Every structure is written in structure tokens, then in C-alpha cells.
Length: 193
Image 1 (tube, one colour):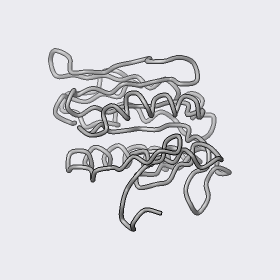
Image 2 (image 1 turned 90 degrees about the vertical axis):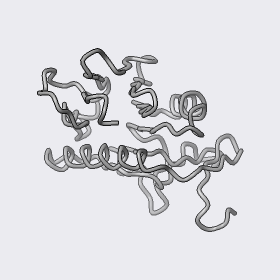
Image 3 (image 1 turned 30 degrees about the vertical axis):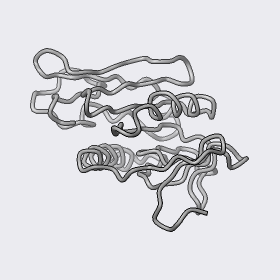
């Protein structure tokens, strides 16, 4: 057992220790979580959203335990007192300098094989969000800093989540200075991250 207060994830039986998140990471996590939570609540959705530290057991063999930055779970049967048993519907990871390889490669593979429907990688240093529709394909969208300071990311898997009680949160997922122009896009100016 790990000492109390030590954060780590277990992937294929190997322990990966986690550094504490920095202030920018926590601001992004808090903002995204609040927007998703508000949207679910305002639309009487049945999905729930959780922030790390929140245990996700990707397999029943206890060889894969992760703490995604944000997890959205629509199947209440997956929720226990210990966390989530099985794949969340939507996972968001916010890249830290020490988590880059893990978020872009190891977790992408594990989430895909576990049955996660949609996976977002929010990369504050690159000012980019990469969206993976893991049920139907691979990379489906990359939103990066574009001329004029407008970034746009399209969520791909929201139709299925809507059927489970979660509609796509629309333009409000990131703070923006410019008026919204694309209904159904996730948009932010380059400074929101």
C-alpha cells in the first residue's frame, strides 16, 4: 500500500507516481468541471462529473487504476463508494510537463481498450485540445491557437452522451473574449488556457 496522501496510478500492474498539479492545471480543471457540471444540472441530465483525485478502475483485475483529471460517467451502475468500476463515458486529461507521454500515449491506449467513448487531451503549453472519438476512430479534432486568437474544438461523442442524459455543453466550455460564432463548438481565446 502507498503512504497516505501519495498520489499514483497503476497501469498494467506498474505504479506511476503523480506530481501535484500546478495552479494553471487546477484552474483549467475547475473551470471545465464547473461548466460540464452546470450544463448537466441545467438540463436535468443523469450523468455525473468527477475531478481528480477520483478512482477509476478500468478493469476488474485491479491492474489498471487511474485518476483522470475529469471523468463523466453516465452509467450509475459503474459508481461505487470507491469510485468508478469500468470505463467512464468521457475523460479529460490536462497535460503537465511530467504527464505528457502518459497522457498522449499510455492513457490513450488504455482508455481506448477499456471502452472510454471520448477522450480529450488539454495541453496548456501548446494551447491545444485534442479530441479522440475512441468508439468510432482516432483523432477527430485538434483545436490549436489560430490566427486572430480563436481556437475551436468540436466534441464528437455528445450525441450518445445526450441519449444518456448529457447534452454537449456548447460554446461555454471555455471563457472567450470574442462573441460566439460556432454553435456546438468548444471555443476559447488563446489566453483561457
